[in-house]
Image (tube, rainbow, N blue to C red; front, side, top):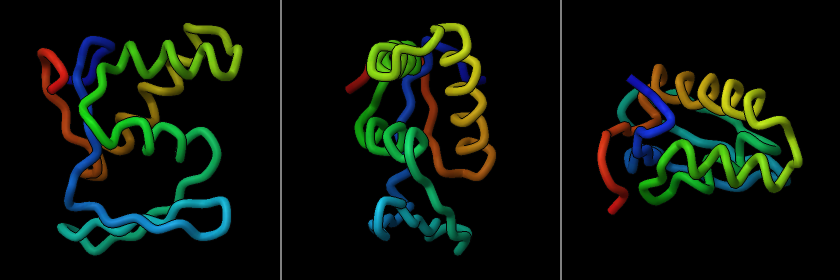
Length: 96
């Protein structure tokens, strides 16, 4: 289950490349392609290394001066979509 205390990291089996201002990704495991831009791309960049979801939400809230509960809701929704697609690794505990 994905929570604010979860430690997340993007799956290393996903290859990405820049295309203009967007990021194009392909999952080696599934062969599926994905495209990210704007905040979604920033989140993807931020989870290159293990990151606590609450830290990610706090950084986004500060960067975009957005309501924290709205940021939390939308970030968790996006992360769940990544998880459903097999693009995200989730664990409890300390980053490292």
